Image: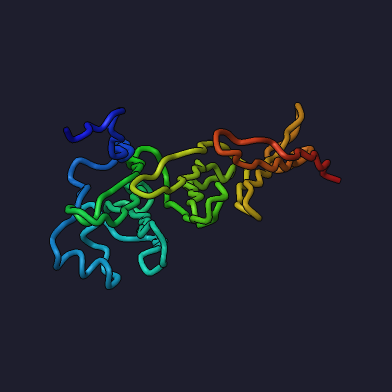
Length: 221
């Protein structure tokens, strides 16, 4: 008699599901691209097929030519006839092995009434995984130089927002793997032109949340 195997067979590992992308896009914007001709144009530097119809590309961060697990294009865009009230946004695309070849994995849009004049993109590895994240700045201008800042972290197959802050009289930059926030501090009676001090705070991502490394208050002479 042939001996029968005992024990529970080992199941093949199930791939982790890819989370649903956070896509705050206009209704007419594309979210996938699988036409080979369009894909070839995108990889040659023509990103029109990745943008909402009628939008112009204002900034691009491309990692298509890097040797790594993520092939990604981040595009800031704007459209509309009024230069002082455009529709603007950011869309992050990644290339996949299976069809559709290109898929939008993250996006936000500012409607004209939001008063955003443009989106600035700064690549920086803020999560310490060797992959550049994006620090974005939605610029509103005005006397207070108001803006919204976000950090969008990318992994294979997805991208997610891990930092969001709105403010005026503030500057946020990525430096040496950290976020550095410099903001005006007003005392009662200070005119808008002349804050009493500036506070600089340094934040670092620990894998789950932002941790404050330091905070210094610099009085204005």
